[in-house]
Image (cartoon, rainbow, N blue to C red; front, side):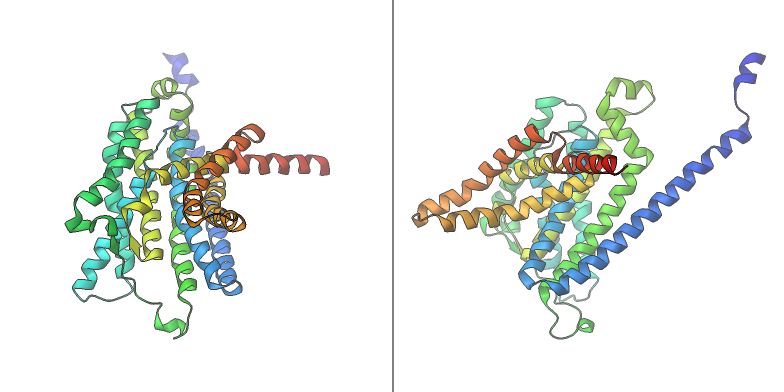
Length: 365
């Protein structure tokens, strides 16, 4: 007994060893805040330098980035495969549409209404994500993929079935107030969309980046690497998986709500199963487990429709064939890109860039 007590460190040492960890957490948070502030200033500068359509495209990238970042946390850090994130985005989109229409019907105005609707969209998506996460925590492999696939099919079908609430295939409009008068009477609306969407996305990324660096991020990775070892280490595996699904659902709901605000409408066709497949392929191509990889995936999601439209314009095809090709070509290009990336760069685009950066630094040294 005396030998055991002698082997234990004194209490004062246990307290002192926690201080460097606290300092590292503070420095990490400060570094993330500086990065977010710098990126925010860059977005403001870019919004004045590019044309309105490019502002709208950048805002769309920011909206998709919320969803791809959350899916990166779920699949890349926690190892859960989800084919239903398009349905979670639809939940957030319809929630913000219902809230904005309710405010408009009551004649309520004010700059605080849209943030309140976005919070309501996140809360509703978190509730759906918690339900799916509880079921997903009991499943593995193809069974987990099957459950999330069912969610991707059921949620848009519900919007069509309850047409009295969701207006069926036509969907709902999303009334959004114009930019504040303080910005001037001729302030471009697309620039205001980029500011609004960029601010919400940067806040979500700040929270995710700090979550990944915290003990919750370490438990996510521990469960992903080996559930048995994580359970022996005292980690509640099911609770960790549900938490990861809830976090991912919250960001997906925010992304869907921002897309609805940008388009000022929402319909079931915008959140089909194809979107869920695109989101998963985008994070794999960008680089699983890295928020920077989620950015590459979001850029690809926005650039791909323009690419397919340009390809169909170069070909002399009939309108029917061109429409059919433009509808199926994005999925084919995504699939081919995924195959090429998995062969040439298994770590995704961000993994390839990181590897090239290390080689350059090694040559300089």
